[in-house]
Amino acid sequence: MKSLVLSAFEPFGNDDINSSAIVMDMIPDVCKTVSITKVVLPVVYKTAWAVLTEAIQRVKPDFVLCMGQAGGRSKISLETIAVNINNSESPDNQGQILKDNTIITGGEIAYSSGLPVFRMLAACDTELAVASYSAGTFVCNDLFYRMLYDEQNGTKESKTGFVHLPYTEHFGRIPFIASNKQVETIIAMISALED
Image (cartoon, rainbow, N blue to C red; front, side, top):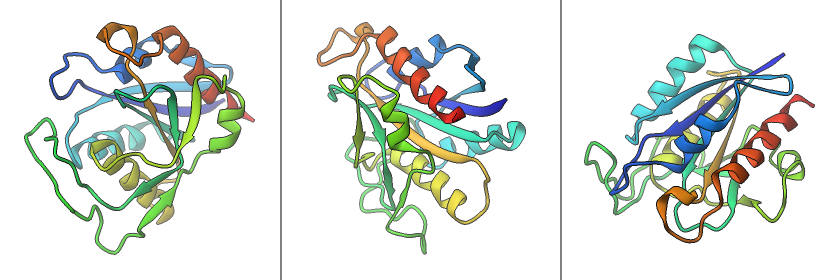
């Protein structure tokens, strides 16, 4: 059986919920032949990476799939790349605002997802999920970039990917995708990893 660490984020900004955590809670602990360990991360630069790294060291999974909330997006976005910059007007949950900040000095400008993005997408309803070429420049991208840097430099053996989720019905905002549909999509993506 393959193993996967699945992460979601705590609420941030003015929200008291996060679509990634809502969806993660609804995903079973086993998808086909993939065993899942779940972890909720703080929306804090670098700390999210440290918490996830601790879980990975404990579990030693084959795969890592990080999930984050991208309110305003109309489709589930499977990210293809992470870029070496933090640049946001919004503070993280410790009040940090990083502008034009290099994530890792000496790192490449960008790294590609370690997971088979297009095979995962082929397993999904294309009306709900797309490939994305921008994970933003906030905490989600910071986490994704650090994970891929570790993967590329041999620090971690797990293959890492990232997916951004739209709002669920719980927010009362549009656009949104119903949580059960988002869960079905993530399960399909995870199940594709066993091939």
